[in-house]
Length: 99
Image 1 (cartoon, one colour):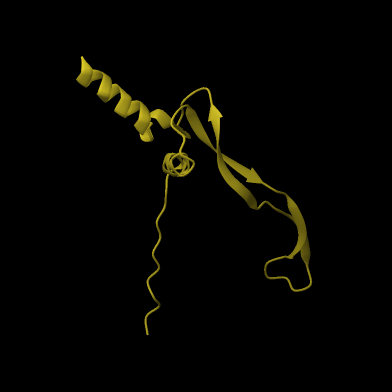
Image 2 (image 1 turned 120 degrees about the horizontal axis):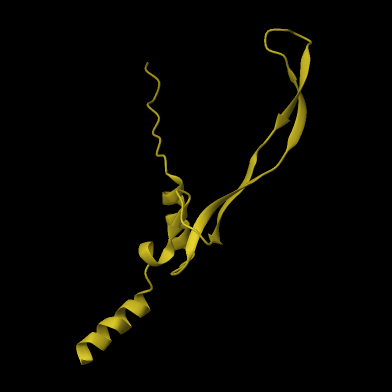
């Protein structure tokens, strides 16, 4: 019996930032991805040598989020472009109609 085929959906940094901007209902500013790390240590078994260990560092990702930044890059998204404020948009439309 064949192993079940795994599905994988990958996201760019900018796609993650865009999703978080929309989730938190942010409408302005340049926002970039932030990744928090922790540091752990352990003795791990040396490959192929029973009873032989090596000290090792373990660096788990502890958090993923966004922060407001000053400059755009490949890690950032402009919230005004990806999640425009519907109130601002409707008030501009109303102002145009009254003229």
